[in-house]
Image 1 (tube, protein in one colour):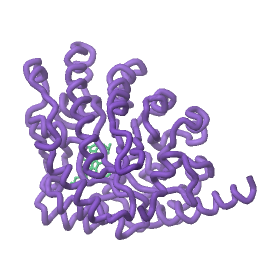
Image 2 (image 1 turned 120 degrees about the horizontal axis):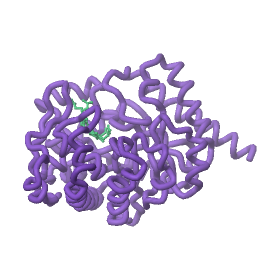
Image 3 (image 1 turned 120 degrees about the vertical axis):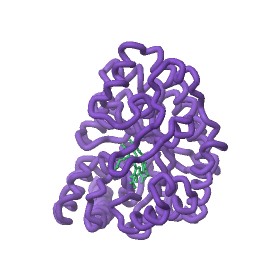
Image 4 (image 1 turned 45 degrees about the vertical axis):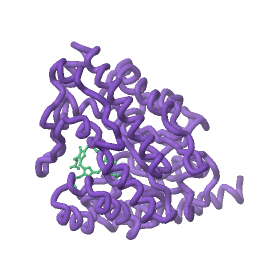
Length: 357
Ligand code: CP3
């Protein structure tokens, strides 16, 4: 591997600079992504073509000195493979044709075989690894069982997740049944990605922060923990680190750090220094620039990047990222400024810490 800074930082080993990648780094803010999506016909057609998915996965790496590639796909491919019928209405986000609203549908739900219904993702992982030729590591991912259940029950995104919350309080047994199936499905799916060449895996719990304190443990973390303990630990003679990200999970960092993950992802509301004090040296931390900072001119982006790096400090175990996915309205120059500032400023920080311990 030419650049293993990400793998080293996730294991809290020293690196010369802070590695950086961005959630949703391949996406609509890039004109070349929009052109490829146009050629594919739709987002789903793009995600379902291993050759085109590989092409867009590499696009941000051609422009910016990023330290990782992330598989181009979507968390909702898993419920799609369960037969819920995913589609993207133009400009409206994801929708399911057959959301889980009655007991019979929930009883009939089964985990898909990743080698069969999700074959296109596994093929994409293999193609991307080939195309990367060891330049940087490849991150595979899945949605957490809870975040997948949010979309599966609601049938679309939501402000209040009313159908999901109604089920949670009225029929928790049904929600637990969905979460059981999702846990099996995500464990098999991530292990298939690892077998095909994913070198890091990340669990996206985008909606875990919508739960109550007790609910987060019962309906989200308990299942993520089971997935983390069921993952293959090694591939090709190297450890496969795992990252757990809960948006709005700042209250539960200690519990997340004890879940069996290698690293905890932080959203932008969390103070990095306080987070480090709370989790100790148990895990690496990933984050956490506010994605909205990228709407400002490059000088402001650079200032905010330095603020985040200062807050994490020079100790090993930080992976720079945004606190959530990059917006489609982000200027490309902002991303260039971010990546350059992370590289140059973190080198200086670490150099200063070494000569002045
Ligand atoms: O990070 C990456 O570059 C990898 C690709 C990736 C996508 N989705 C591509 C995508 C990843 C890791 C995801 C994860 C995902 N998908 C999450 C969890 C992370 C998060 O952002 O909270 C969620 C909740 C989804 C579900 C989803 N997919 C939504 C809500 C949407 C619509 C949002 C929007 O911006 O319109 C998608 C579509 C989607 N997934 C796009 C991309 C690039 C935009 C589709 C397009 O090109 O039109």
